[in-house]
Amino acid sequence: MKFFHLSDLHFGRQLHGYDLYEEQHGFIMQLARYLEEEKPDAVLVSGDIYDKAVPAGQAVTLLDEFLTSLNNVPAFIIAGNHDSAERLKYGRSFLEKHNIYISVLPPQNEEERLKKIVLKDEYGNVCFYMLPFLKPGMVRHFMPGEAAEGEEAIIKALLKKEEIDQTARNIILSHQFYKNGNNMPERCDSEQKTVSVGGTDAVDISVLQDFDYAALGHIHSTQPVGEEKYRYCGTPLKYSVSEAGQEKSITVVSMGAKEDGINIKTLPVKAVHNVLKLRGHLKDIIALASEENRQDYISITLTDDDIPEMVKDQLEAYFDNILEIIADNTRTRQILSEDVADFKELSPYEAFEAFFKETAGREMDGQESLLIQEIIEEAASKIS
Image 1 (cartoon, rainbow, N blue to C red):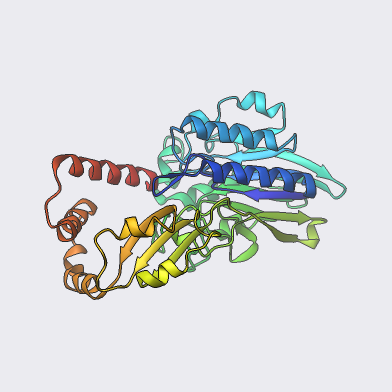
Image 2: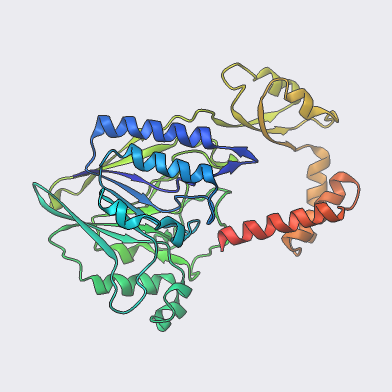
């Protein structure tokens, strides 16, 4: 049995205001080629299909392109924390007739179980269990005790009800924050940083010990959690500047007899435009410009003590898609060293308000203040 493991597609994503439709369309075209070459038995997608609960029209078009690219290969798709259950499950009954199975919510009553699909090969059954993203509030009405304890207790109780057949090969799809003991997975700046060891939303990977492979979603960097068989496949594209140094890929998992374990390889995904971080003096940054990186998405950190007022206009003569220009020099380091203690006690809005006043030399006007409040509220809703 061979299958592709994907997650965190984030269709509809933007990067510092740049539309990533071309990048995501390019990924789908590469996926289609790999499906033709590798001929997997299934495709697993472990959540965050969309970037927003209410996806834009282009995002829906991308999902349509993605499903079409599968070309009748069975697919198992679960909802992530960015997805709307109501929207993602649209057409689910029709899609199941074409071997596309979607699960959007954890069980909603005592009798309900996880969605389970069984495929067969020469070694017997391969059972796929689908566990969408969950929060305690989703199950509190029938699991009040576990909900009070947090996600780990909920998942442990749900899996206990499944009575998993240990003679078969068992695979679970899950979109949750998993850790291995006190070891937390590596996270990017685009992901929530507030989870602490022992926090109710951090789930120990030991709850998945009955599975031969855990296809995990939610973390953007490809990595195992403890053992190789518990794996975050990461995003197929770079969705933040903090991911600039990562190599994105599609995870391919093969398994024979149960006692033989699993084999993992990756297939590289090449973006239409790369994400790069450049740091140095202005003249050195300009010297790095080339036809190869002109259209890439560029984050620039300038270390000059004297930065020209129209520096962005100057750099745009060399780079078409500048994400941000950051000043890191004697003056900015002094400001941070003097004010960092004060900023620790401020709310996100207050911190930005103080930063704006320091850098712009004036207070925000009413429209700017309202815009920042809306941005902070939107960001908070994504990580809640």
